[in-house]
Amino acid sequence: VSAEDYTPWGYYMGNIENDNLGLIGAGVATLRIAIFVPGDGILAGGTVAGVNVPVADASAVTALSAWVTPTLSSDETYTQQVDLTGYASGFNQAIFDEPYTVTESGCYVGYTITVNTALNTQGSKYPAVYDPSTQVPNSFWIWYSAQYGWQDIGNDYGQSCLQALFKDLQLPETAAHFGTIKNAVTGVN
Image (tube, rainbow, N blue to C red; front, side):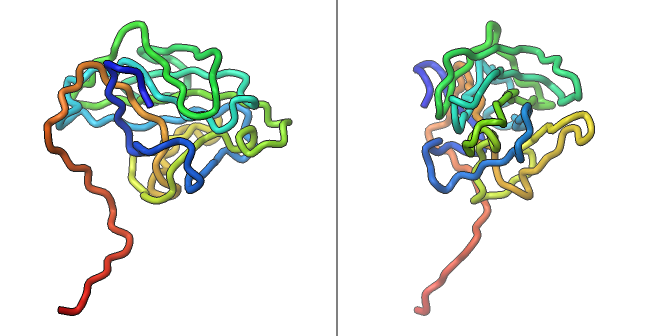
C-alpha cells in the first residue's frame, strides 16, 4: 500500500478494495476523519511522516488534505498538513514536509475531505471509509460541523481505514495485535 521507507500503522490494515467495508457521511460536503495514535509501546518516540488517506470515489472529491496534531479542535490548525492533488480511488499517500514525533500523550492523524454531494455516487454521499468488523474506541473520530464537533464513533461503527505512515519505525520480529473475538466455537473431545 505504501512506498518503501514507510511503515503503515492503523486500526485497519487491510485492502481498501474490500466489499465488506462501510461508508458513512450522510451527504455532508466536508468531513474530518481521524484516528488516535497511542504514545506508548512500539509507537512511542516514532515519527509520523505522512498519512494513507482512503478515498471511496475520487471523481466526487473536490478537496483533500492530510494532517497530524497533538489534540483535536474545532478549528483546522494542525502541526503538519499537506494538500493532496491527483488523488485516486483507494489509498492516497500524503507525506509531510517534516515528520511529527509521537509523544507519550499520543497524537491524532487524519484527513479533511470535501465532496460534491450533488453527484449520485456512494462515495460522494458517504466519503468516509471504515471497517465495521471490529468496534474500537479512538479508531474512528469524525467531525461533521461546529454543531456536532468531534465524536469518537469507533465503538459504534468500527475502525477508520486511514493509516499513519511511520518513518524508521523499528518493529519487533514478533508482534501481536489483539482484537475482539466475535464468535467462538469449541469441539467436544
